[in-house]
Length: 204
Image (tube, rainbow, N blue to C red; front, side, top):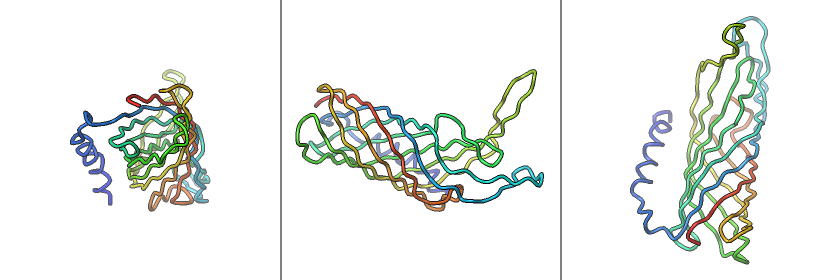
């Protein structure tokens, strides 16, 4: 599984590279803000071996999402996105930051109006969990040293609605479901993410 996760980005970059974007009927770029939710694993970890175990947290915090897509048929397309926690969160004496990435098929069923467009995505990707040790020094200030990272495979699905405020600019509330097998740092393998995005479409 680890070798698959490491090879996945290269495989998907190859897929992207073989797609003829000249035949795309349209596309969009977007940026969103929201939060991701997962339960605590309810473990007590003594990371530094000092006899003072600290409980693991649940996943919360402000997340940013960046993405782009290309539509090759009126209702079918392909896209990719990255979602990451903006600030580091506390994790049993360390700091952590998760980064989710995924590549998806996109289906936009027939919309009621040109201004309201439902959108569904399904695909796969990964998540990288990075852990940092924070220290303070009166001469150098606060520093964060990377002490380890863990990569996981994920399956991704989402549903949202594009509300076009102009012919090209839209806002999109969206719910993402990320299934991460053996996501042992947290209490469940399913991560829910809630995002409000603003995007720009071209070629509509």
